[in-house]
Length: 103
Image (cartoon, rainbow, N blue to C red):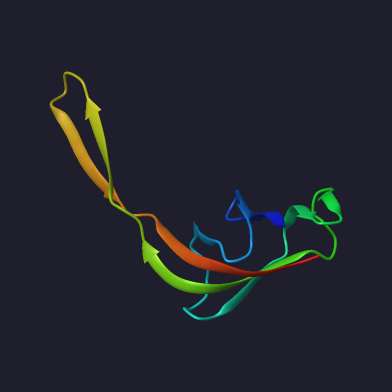
């Protein structure tokens, strides 16, 4: 059994007990979260694709951690102007463990 959920503008294929890293969500560690934007659902009965989402399907998970990813460096450079700038960025994320797929 698996589901395809949408959160933070991205889609994730998940099964029960999966751990996924999603765009930062506004919730604390240990909190239960539900994803109701289920794009597709595969069960023993068959495969259901939503138009745009599957009705009545919900994916539940528990927030394990809020954190930041590895630092990514971006270099801006302008030729013949002796101008360059180094910028760093750390993308925030939320680590979620999927507990149940209902649908």
